[in-house]
Length: 248
Image 1 (cartoon, rainbow, N blue to C red):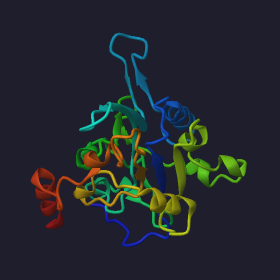
Image 2: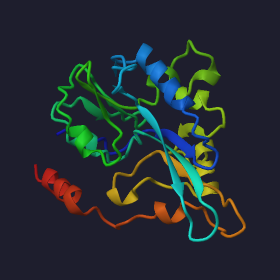
Image 3: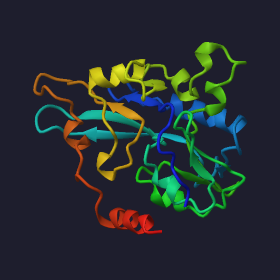
Image 4: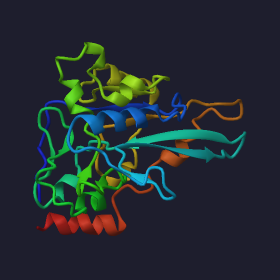
């Protein structure tokens, strides 16, 4: 098992505004492009022009039609990638130490030279945020573009993840969520930023800003009932697995 740091100097992460995301997939394309050409092994595709295309993506956008109890249905676009959890189960199950969380900024990364492609990290992640690259045989995940954000050769405005830089609607924000005075922390406080599946106990660093009310029939976000925790504590198979791993 790989140990997690007790604390990190910063908590770098994303804040995603579900109110302004238009589901254009620009973040998906820019992420694929940057991470294929730069950090780590390329993100491969299999039969991209065939009948059954597949490929490796570090960021995906899911779209859902939500029907409130009153008022018209609403379409919600939900981007999802690694949430760089404080208590990251993908790290603690890694048998080789390939998955690790950095103490300086809290970013969760994979040392691909140590990854044996066992898939335990993908199995442990409750968010489905890890993907096996079929060509390279290693696990891939969002790196928060660690090769961009500290790159002094780039203009300052480009030292953010590719998905943030390219978002045309300004739905993605990047910064230190461990600093209560940072712009992203202030945004979370003002808009009631939420954790994804908090009942899993992973303490995700990334936050989601809920959609604003869309119509005169409701004074709350259409997604609010769906983002409430379904359990106060982890339960079922994941709870058993957590207890089993703690005894090792």
